[in-house]
Image (tube, rainbow, N blue to C red; front, side):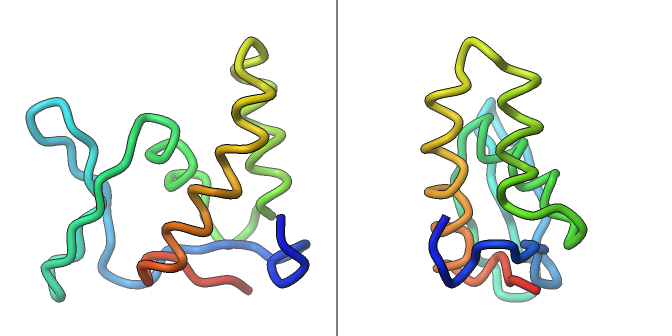
Length: 93
């Protein structure tokens, strides 16, 4: 996690939701018609971004659920969160 987001809690910006289309996972914002493509891990991360959990807590939950991929998840979650935030789909509190 970056110093800027350490200890903060990500939450979805209004209007975004997950859509599955032809086996692909998309974050879609109806009002802006913005579409972000993500993978299964990204979809899980998105669903855990409720404004209550920190990025570290999200990482720990996913690592506990998928212990065989714990090392990969540890690097992937911060990258996914940063990507969603850069696209305006997530904010931090």
